Structures are given as C-alpha cells and as structure tokens.
Amino acid sequence: MGKAKTNIICADLFAGAGGTSSGLRLAARELGLTLNLTAVNHWDIALATHAVNHPDAAHLCQSIDTINPEDAIPGRKLHLLLASPECTDHSRAKGGKPRSDQKRADAWMLMKWVNNLYIENILIENVKEFESWGPLTAKGLPDKRYKGQYFQAFIAQLRINY
Image 1 (tube, helix red, strand yellow):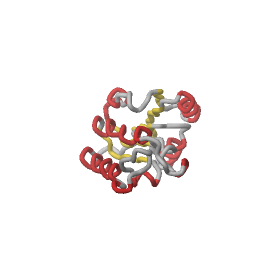
Image 2: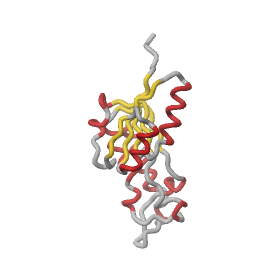
Image 3: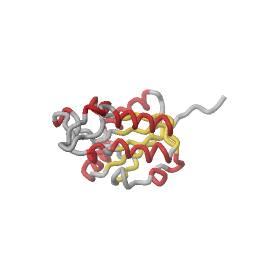
Image 4: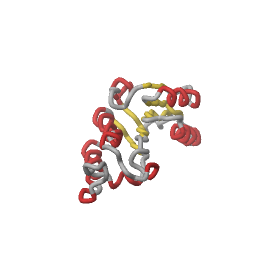
C-alpha cells in the first residue's frame, strides 16, 4: 500500500488577506495534514497582510499575467489551486454592469497555470454573474444574444486541459 499524503501543496492566486488560505489551513489541520502554500497577488499591501496571517507561506508579489507558474511551483505539481479572480467590476457589487472585457480577464489567466502544471484539484471562487459572461456591447453591457458564451468557452478549455 502507498504512503498516505501528509503534505498538501497549494497555490492561492489573488490571495488577498488570506481568508481562503485560512480555511484551507484549518481543514488540513483537522485532517492531520500540513500545508505547503504559495500565495500570489500583485498588490503589495494585500500580500503583506497575507504574510502576517500566513508567515510560513511563500509570497510572490506579482501580477498573475506575468508570473511563470513553472518558476513559482517547484516540481510543477499542485494538489490544489485556489483562485479568486477579481469580480467587483462585473458583479452585483457594481450593479452587474461590466465596464470592459479586460476587467474580466483574470479568470482566463488561470489557464496558464492549468496548461503548465499538474493540478489535482481546482477551486475557483467567483460570482454568479460569471456564468452569464459573454461579449459586451459597444456600451459595455452584456450582449444578451451571447449570454454565457465566454463562461462556456472557459469551461470547455478547462475540460480540454484538466
């Protein structure tokens, strides 16, 4: 019989202050597992806060679109990829009215991680509006004719590579 897993290798993208990391750490501890955590965020203040809450994690202050996952994760293997892409610009927090497709690009940046690492499990936290993503009109509003088109393409890409 194989050796039981005792260490969870995890990356927390868009890490923020570390709430998701804290939940994972508590769950791992309850299961008798240790957590080898890498936290990534482009905002130095958020990452400094994460470092206070999780001093034993590796902290990378870089934009998710510029970081090389193979350099960030030794061994190129994760048991869990956590990701909480920015959502305030296209969620109910701002009335659900996207301002630009660029503000919705963070979720697509996860594909670089999926394509370049071996990942056993992925947990993507986002908002309900994520499911209805599609092209925007010239006024920056969702084009109802293509509701869900981008989300379905995102899911299809995950199925191909994951």
